[in-house]
Length: 112
Image 1 (cartoon, rainbow, N blue to C red):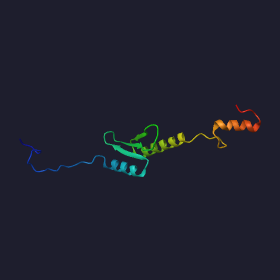
Image 2 (image 1 turned 180 degrees about the horizontal axis):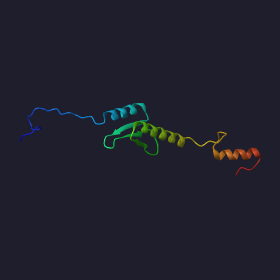
Image 3 (image 1 turned 180 degrees about the vertical axis):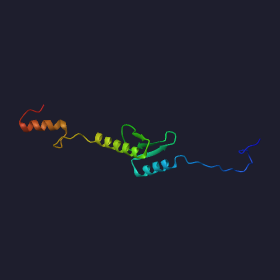
Image 4 (image 1 turned 120 degrees about the vertical axis):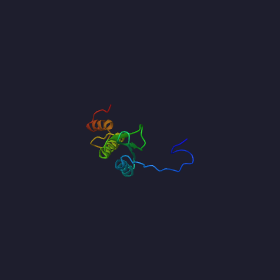
């Protein structure tokens, strides 16, 4: 039997290519900067992915072809999360359901 991988043959080193090195480095940088996210770079799709690490009812994953686009998607997801978590408020700081009742009481009307 002959060949490079035959028992008793000396170890032969081969060149290891680093595919998309700058993009992978950028994904590592984003992963360090955005502490609430895990950032990855897909060699197969040549796209950046981010997985949110906060507690929530569903997994949040965003993707984009560029790191700048990914950061924008991450900001949008965080803003959506904040808007969904905050209860809606009226001008007086009361929730909409109690605001109308309080206004009717001040006018002397009945609260239903």
